[in-house]
Length: 116
Image (tube, rainbow, N blue to C red; front, side, top):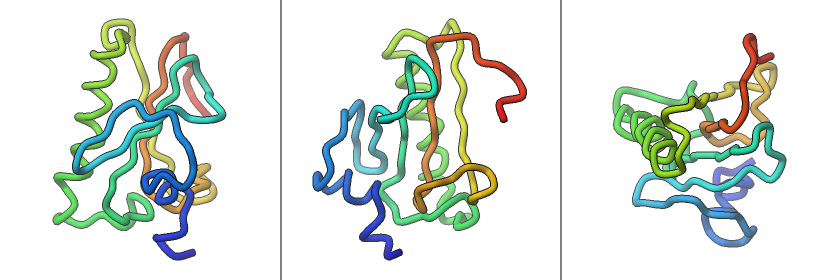
């Protein structure tokens, strides 16, 4: 699948509707359509990266931006103090279903461990 054709690229281009939570020059965040927690936000880089496996030292800033955005949203949405989880699935066996790097931000209930 071409990077231009994946689901998240279509969402960023506005071809598929999404409930946008945040956007800047580097990342786009929106509510997951099949939430696994009361708050389930996907944070995706605008850079065409399939997964963590694609990252190089040149991508350190955008990778860090995913985490910074998660912390920022947790504070803005009021669950930074009660707790939240950040998850990045890499590859099919880990549960990655869209070939574009993305971080799941989960909150709003007691999250169990181990998660899978």
